[in-house]
Amino acid sequence: MRHEEMTCAADMKVRLGDQEMTALAWAVARGLKWSTVRQRRYRGSNWQEALTPGLRRSRFNDGALAGSR
Image (cartoon, rainbow, N blue to C red; front, side, top):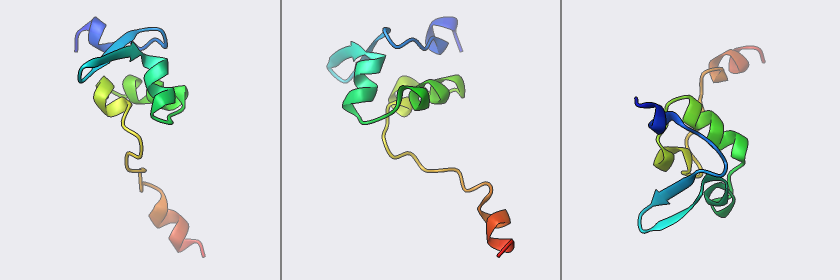
């Protein structure tokens, strides 16, 4: 991944479809916390994925919790 593609700043201009806003404005408009968007970007998501509300939650620890009851 190129450095520009990995950049994640709240004031960075992001174009989705035919609209362009700052990354923070996109997060607010989509009901996401900025920390969520930032972590998704750091983990390798592109802007489209990072700014998608309601992504699946990891089920990694669910089995461990079910066995302790």
